[in-house]
Image (cartoon, rainbow, N blue to C red; front, side, top):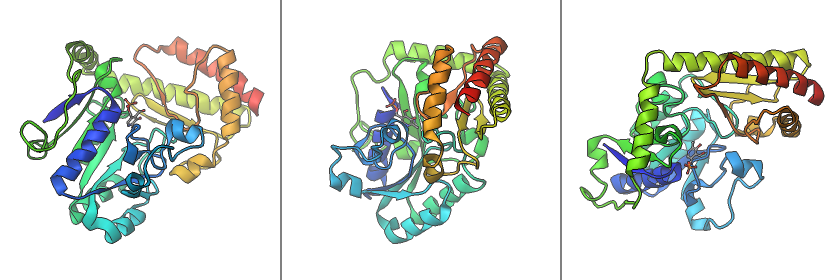
Length: 319
Ligand SMILES: Cc1ncc(COP(=O)(O)O)c(C=O)c1O
């Protein structure tokens, strides 16, 4: 069952409440550098804009809220196990971006998501995939359809509204029956499931569903990532790139970026200079080294070529 809401933040906020309602527990585990919207208890060690502005722990979040959020480094199953061993009886859910897109572009290590599934089952807490960014962008449905790991709750946003304010959270019927009016967990919104948003989302998803859509998108994203990588090498600049579906990333780093520590160690000053060098050449990149990049079905070979050309000059400028 799925409940529509208006933003990714509302989806994750509701997913926490659902996990607490279903388990009768309070705490949540999140990963350093993952961003799940501006929900009080998830604005702890958050990536994205919070990390960019040097305030991953937001002002205005009461200590008691932050204290109910437990942290672990991304891709570190041992750390999650330690946290759950200590506090497992009071953990309602583990929240994760199945590909982390708010500290650059960080893929889950082999076995990381499957390991989370096992740990959640062992400790009786829910596994929540925040697919607000990866949903319908990395694959039809979301990254869960690529990695084969089934979360208890999925949060969606962004692509499912086709540019309109639409998001959703959902899970099994047994779980979602905790939500009002079937169950005691209250959540509702005036504009939830509004007809304009739904029409826009449906139109977008009907395009995404066409045969070969994601293969084509990934081909374009790969061409861009490879072009950027080659241009960086040509200028003698270290660059890590990664791709999944329509999502890609570039980090100014000598070694692969696997977690928030690695992401913070990237050369963010160089990213800022590169961003401005690209802007001067008419290319608007995401405005932070903590952001992933997205390609659209509308980008063609000429657009990708123009970006790579601008990047080749810009890498030389910041080398
Ligand atoms: C993974 C993830 N979760 C949640 C959100 C919050 O979504 P919204 O900005 O729609 O509230 C974002 C937004 O960037 C996101 O990337």
